[in-house]
Image (cartoon, rainbow, N blue to C red):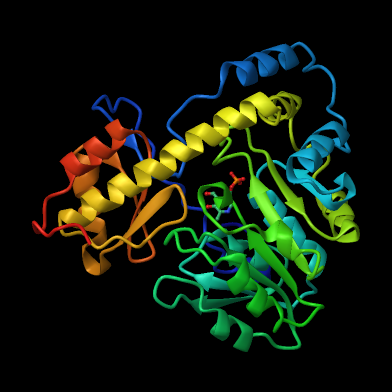
Length: 357
Ligand SMILES: Cc1ncc(COP(=O)(O)O)c(C=O)c1O
């Protein structure tokens, strides 16, 4: 590098590592199970709405995203002044942290969990504090114990990526009661639609320090559109919107998101989510019966803790035309269609002929 100096606070900033995609020219059948996407293309009505929006691409979108925020407000049953939107929930995570921390404030999160939390802290000159998982789940006692007067934010990934574990509202209530009121608790619910008895929105009335972050990338099947939303204290949300890059969701994505939030499309997304939940049970049982250790998952993926054989098993899957994600000492496998399950089972060896546990 020449004479330019990278900001000191960014030393060691980890790059975002995406799940593997098929490489150009890779013609073998590929089951793409590395990025927790849904296996279906967007519903026709959503595609049509986006095509129409292309005609208006010479105009900026509404900078306040009022219509989109209203649609989300109706979808989640909360007022729209408590909602902020951005181009993906990742962008929201970074800006929510940015609104709440000073230089040197601490941001607590679990590890392994969604790796971007560390980036969100560092990008905002805060100190990332990673608390190891306990039995593949957030160690809530240890996370509570890590809170100091410098802590401004605790992030709980619920269900957790990559392990799929989830806390119910009842369990989180106990934790929230022990967190100081001036520490924000961000509940990253990217996968909430695949879980049962998990809904951070219901915790917000008793705990105004809770901020729920969700996305249209997973259950709504629109990862390529980049639309996420957050629900929280209206003043915090207002600052999140001010801090974000103006016009950051493009008009075509807004049109797609609005279409996705109409009752008919939501109903279809729910049917698709239900089929993924069914397939998750099929896949989990099949893997266990072949001798693989599978963590019980509440999301649209399952985690196989593999330790040192993680890289070789991921490579074996890739050689069999199945892309999975080596992460956090295991492989994370997205639950897809029954065909995807078949491909995965075909790519993995049978370790033992144990009866399903
Ligand atoms: C836990 C978690 N949060 C947030 C995201 C980001 O989602 P988005 O596509 O809305 O940026 C992901 C994506 O994989 C995730 O796993």
